[in-house]
Length: 426
Image (cartoon, rainbow, N blue to C red; front, side):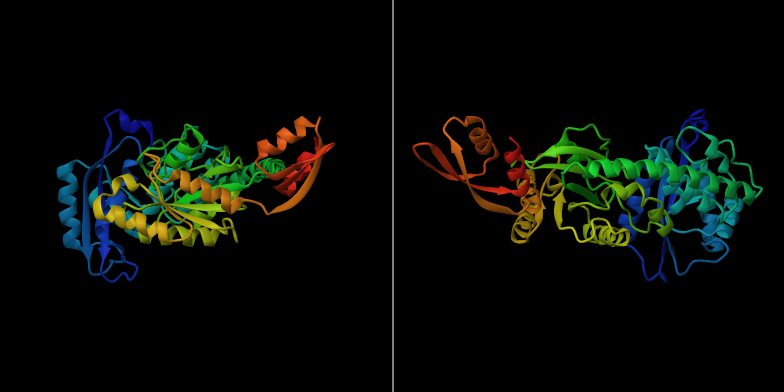
């Protein structure tokens, strides 16, 4: 969003969810509309004036809606003094042009809105470049208005407003040049990240990736476990770039915990692909922790969307997976008891609240157990004077028993290869 919107106060928007009866992949319109409103709320300087489900027998090729509905919505737009219409679904370039002409306002479809949010949230250089690349491929298919955002320093793509909003001329060469330039920059950034990744691989800590539907509470859980000040608002796409922190588990195991961008249904394939490199940090994860908002009415559908994207991206391929039913603090009564009982019966499922801390200890113990490397039994002989090495073994919690002799003590230890190597170096 451009700061121009703040001169006259926030831009007013009408959110529409087309409920197309002929669409086989139809979503429940109630939760779908709520999610669309939450998406709109994720943009700064935007005020949702009204949100409507619009029932349609089928999508009209030129205008999406029928003529009667177009006129009805036009009156509503004028009465509400709306400057932007957000359509929760795909809108073709022809439909967008025709609807903007009919209504006299700007229009964004779901893809355009998500791109705007990504542009506003992306924090790292690579994240910014990936958004710009995805935005250019999106813009190239329709009226080219605001590719000038590439020269700006702040977030926002200019679809909603800004210096390039009246630039209708389709200068495809300029876009292609911008794509080439961004790909070159991206290649340099990815090369630098590859070096960092190679260096991090030398740190013998397993990577645990938190994945989940956007707004499932991953960042709140991440903050609870690490004490980090990661943005954790009740807002879709609050986190866009992976954040990694070292965490010591209760048994002493050290891990790298990674918080990632939230996934969302109907996310265009090219947009997911654009973020493959942003998610590169977790592609080699040793353990996937799937965080679900168990209080959400469509928690099962959200879980299905997440797992589809995880499989498509190859995140943590072959790695074990734990499922965390988060936001138990929002579930009450018999349903809460039933969920806790169900989680207790299932392997690798934990009912937790990242806010209150409920169930987190059990989840951490399971992470430690899942990541625990194989151990082997050995006997170690130490002289009575060798107090330092004896103390180290007890600190590690690996001593199973000991027999004291006249000249030395024989300890029976159950340890990992790494612990044994560390001990031999003492």
